[in-house]
Image 1 (cartoon, chains in turn purple, blue):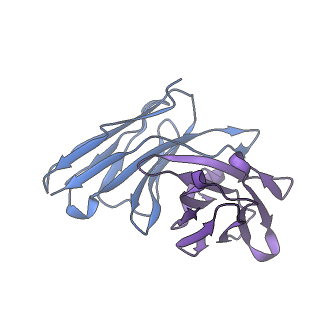
Image 2 (cartoon, chains in turn green, orange):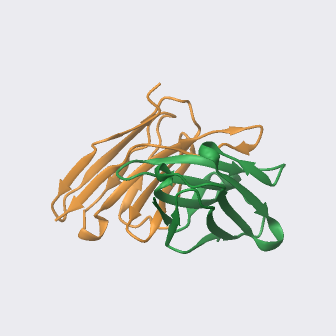
Length: 114
Length: 115
């Protein structure tokens, strides 16, 4: 079965600093990969996804992620953190028939200080 | 366009009671899933469906039943509630275009407490 590991349950950065959230996956076939964000007491919002094609994927709010097959990684980055980026971030990989259900990592909480 | 609608938003059950969490989507999405979210555990897949009449188990299916009689609706049934089922439940739907999976749109969640 596929699985996702998010390194670091809590990441703290200063406003304006680089954001790097790490995600590694296990899969025996080319996966579909996703990053979601969850603000307090809300549902999940899709930040970006990799399905096929270009390995550098750009998402909303200035985030991007790079699919590296050799490293089985899909790390999320943002050049300059903003206070509004404070939230919980989840990496997910497709699972099941025709890649139709998601398996999530345990999440990384991002804190941004001024 | 309402997206994915979950009801109720909050529910308190007594141990042993049964109930159904409702989920409806108006985007004509073929794929739907149920997840539970617990602190430090991320989201875990309970059941999913690839179309009307077709369902399958996820990571943590025990104690839950689903059915998919229409494209729009995907209810989750708790047969006999247990305190271990205290959680936040999310329903999600998605589509596939040209064989490429679109990624899920999530509802706002149901917060369930079993006492």
